[in-house]
Image: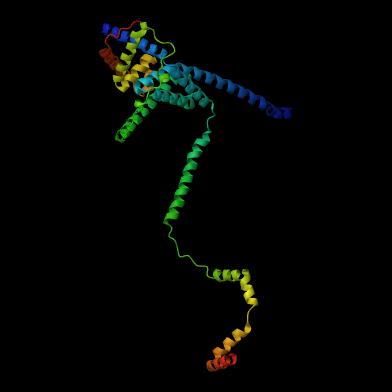
Length: 210
Length: 142
C-alpha cells in the first residue's frame, strides 16, 4: 500500500502535467482571442487619434503598431478591462516621442543644404486612393465637415485634442482618459471642456446631414 | 446653462458622427497594415517570456564583463614598457645550429687545408724569416 502511495504521484505526474498544459493552452488561446478582439476594436480609432496628432499616415500606423506590440508583450497578462486605457497610454507616449523626434529632425534638416522634403515626393496614387466605397455626391457635405473638423482638431493644443479624441471618439470615461493621458481626472475635464469650447468657436453649430 | 449643456452635447454628437464616418473611409491599404500589425502583436504575445532570472542575470553579467574589460584596459594603458632582457645566450646557439644545418659549411670544414694555416702561423712567429722566406720562396718559385 505504501508502495502504491509512493508510486502513485510518480505515475500521475505526466497526466497532471498534460492536464496543466491543456489548461494553459486553453487559457492562452482564450487570452489571445480576447486580445485579438480588443485590438481589432481599437485599431481604426487609434489610427485616427494618432493621425490627428501626427498628421501623417505612415507615422500614425507606426505609432499604432508599436502600441499594439508593446501592449501584447508587456500587458497581455493583465485583465482585459485594463487594456484600453493602457493601450492609449502607450499610444500617447509613442505619439509624443515621434513628435519630439520630428522636431529634432526638422531642426537638423533645416541646417542641411540642398535638402528635399519628403512631402515633395510624388504621391502614390494607390495609397492616395479612397476606400473602395466612393462617397456619393450626397455625402459631399460630410466630407467638408470632416475636413473642417480635422483642421479644427489640428489647431487644438495637444492635450485638449487628446482629451477630446479619447472621450469623444474612443468613448473612454473620465477615469480611463485620465489613466491614458497620465493626468488627474480634473485635468481631463478641463482639457475636454476647453476643447469643446474651441471647436464650437471654430465650427459654429457644425450642422451636418446625418 | 441648460442650453449651453445641450449645445455642447449636440456638438459632441455631431463631431462623433463625423469622426465615426471618417473611420469607415479609411482606405484598404491602411486597414491591411493595421491588420498585419495586430497579428504581429498577437504573435509577440504568444512568444514565451524570458525567465525571471535572466532579466536579472543579464545586466549583472553585462556589468561584470564591462568591468573586466575596463580593468584590463586600465592595466594595459597604465603599464610602462620595462627594459627587455636580450637573450644573449640564445644568439650563438642559433648561429651554431644554422652553421651545422648548412651543407656548404660542412663541406668547407671537410676541405680544410692544414698546411696553409700552419705556414701562416709560422710566419707570424718569426717575422725575420718571413721576409727572407718570401725572397727565397719567390726565387725558388720563379
